[in-house]
Image (cartoon, rainbow, N blue to C red):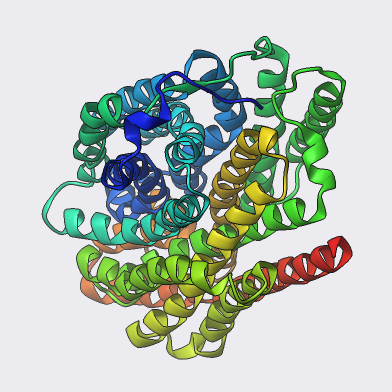
Length: 506
């Protein structure tokens, strides 16, 4: 992919101006990452207001990342044609407006629709940032540090989401977690036209509507099938959806291989370091988002912490994630990058093992310690994997490579909730023992999720309420062992694949 710069690079040659531009460009990165996790701490309040089914509750979280991931390649291609900065500005404006509308959603279904639309505008924000940063920082050393800061904002933003959400929920309605997009994006809308040079592909290929459709019909049915099977068991409809996704995926790959100007150059995946780094990127985020989905509810509904206190529990991990993501850059000059990536993945797995070992006494201290270990690993692996993804392909294909990296991140957020989250839900539903005397509606709500049980408990006499919540907490924590084990095994598998692929490439 060639890059045409409409504004001369000399216009942003001073280091100070370049770093200010970087600060502007990481704003949407932080926002997207925060949005992936901020709702986890608002779910109990949303469940109390709307009493959604467990599947609907998961869709409120999932649909945003799913739509965003499905459109990243498409929006990256669109940015090549109309200008990456222009697409960034359109996405920022739309994201701010829809966020304000979502804050006042009248129903769970309305909120799901708003989150889907946020995914559309979020997809406009993401593909532009890395390409623009590469254009601004002409010096290779400064560019590596800038990319490390950019990557660290993903993981730090994901961890900061619960803190921001907890602080807002302590004093305001849950809709406040959406309104934070407005003050974050306003500086971008004001400063980006002045500080960020426009860039576009001078010879882009035509837009391929069928490829766009195939990306959507690949990811949407597959994730829906995973969610449906985990919640309701394997059904013919879930199998059919999975088959539709597989057929669409195969068709997409074939179409890209035949096209002279593909939306995504699938030949990139023949490079083993590239593909293994994508896998590392994906599974580290699966672990992070799955961990936060569980911890946010455990802290509030099992340990009884307020939203703010629960969010602050994640603060040490957020800080350590940012530090690890930046500190690993100079270390990579002395230690092979793939070794650091493997160490990071092992630390992610170690965080889950720590949870597994103390699952019978999972207090705040244990959560802080295990989350800190996991976040250090995520910070390391994300920085190194993103750098490897860009460096392991030809410069002309760096735009496509960065789009794949961002897609892996967002799919990791979806799959982390869809798989690990639904495992918890399945174990909860199989283990919860409800007291007698509940109405049919109360029984259905209490059996759906621990959030539903908490809502029902608030309407019961104290003795019955206590029995219900004791059973709900025990049932919810029954999912710790299998979920932590699955997550740890998957991440260790990714570490093994990285080791094998780099040895083969060497």
